Length: 89
Image 1 (cartoon, rainbow, N blue to C red):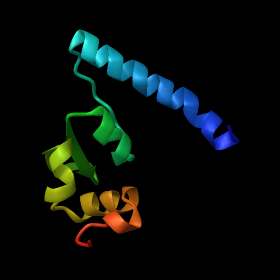
Image 2 (image 1 turned 120 degrees about the vertical axis):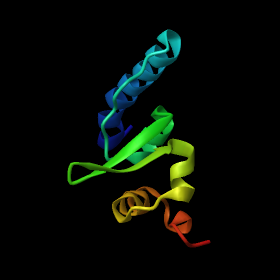
Image 3 (image 1 turned 135 degrees about the vertical axis):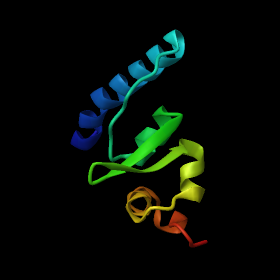
Image 4 (image 1 turned 60 degrees about the horizontal axis):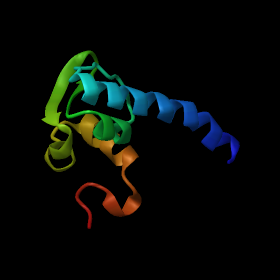
């Protein structure tokens, strides 16, 4: 396990713990992140904020196909692999 993998291990443990608690106790959590891969894995719905304003509200599963705001699209572009870029096949 390299240094980068070791530093991510506690982060993943915390996310898994939060996900388990959320499911077990039917909790609602406010989770703030720029990492849309984590948000998509962890959350059912999301709000995208830009300059202090909500610019998108969506189910996580729908965001990849229905993003409208340029900031949301920029966040998505940073999280997708080159072959998955928006508007490309």
